[in-house]
Image (cartoon, rainbow, N blue to C red; front, side, top):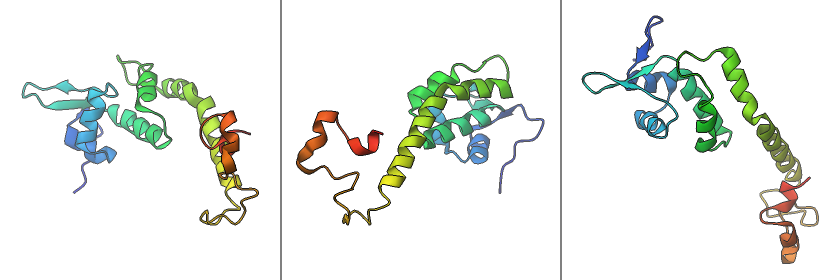
Length: 152
């Protein structure tokens, strides 16, 4: 049975939010401990999340899938208003916070995709052009990591 938040519901239980967001209750409690979302407690000490928490959870999950650290997500979420439901403009404003970082990640992924296209399971048939090959650690002077993949 799928739980739906009633259109007029102002709050959700942890179970309702978990089912609706696809995030385990334990993860929601973790997000709360980490200051990413908040809830109020009922007189019976049960969590109640405001309806806009669903959007915050979606934002957190999407950001995590992009590889953005929770500390960075937390800092950006602090820019949202706490006294009202965030508007489209609020979300647009915070999404600009890491546009440059995302553009850099996209360029890195494109370089990875393009440079590895000659490799076949890296039993590497193209060692003379392989982006991962670094005989005698020649690239150590350029810094740590796979330098050919990290640099333009």
